[in-house]
Length: 163
Image (cartoon, rainbow, N blue to C red; front, side, top):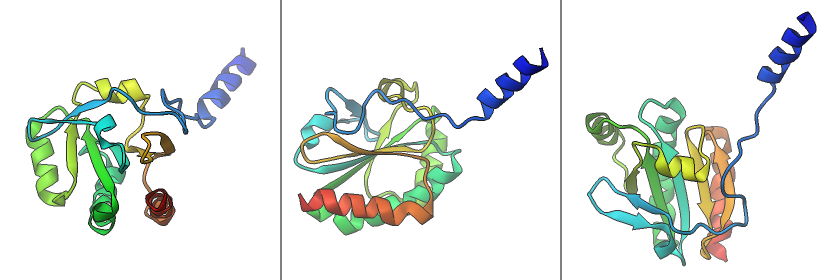
């Protein structure tokens, strides 16, 4: 019995590799994201651009840290073809508006309060970002956000923009 309990505890403590509905190299298709302005963004309509698709929530501390980074990326690379779509998972409009008033995003804010899109893509942790190339294929998936790795993400974006 003790052995079973120990094995269960060890299994619970092992790192879990997230399982995504999309793998690197696969195309993103049929993904329409409602926006805070009342419209929508169709990811397939963004073919020809490099897309940084980020899932976030206002209560998520790493998400708060990623917003200044995404603003910098958008300002630096937007004219070169980088499109950032940050999809919010909150379900309270006032919470979203307060967060956005503090962070002043310069990029598109999508809404997914029911988690439909997040579930469709297999997002189970926030933030999660998909870096999509100009042909509409996922090239990198990032779970979490660390400032120490921001330079690596920027290098990935620069490489995709150069193609």
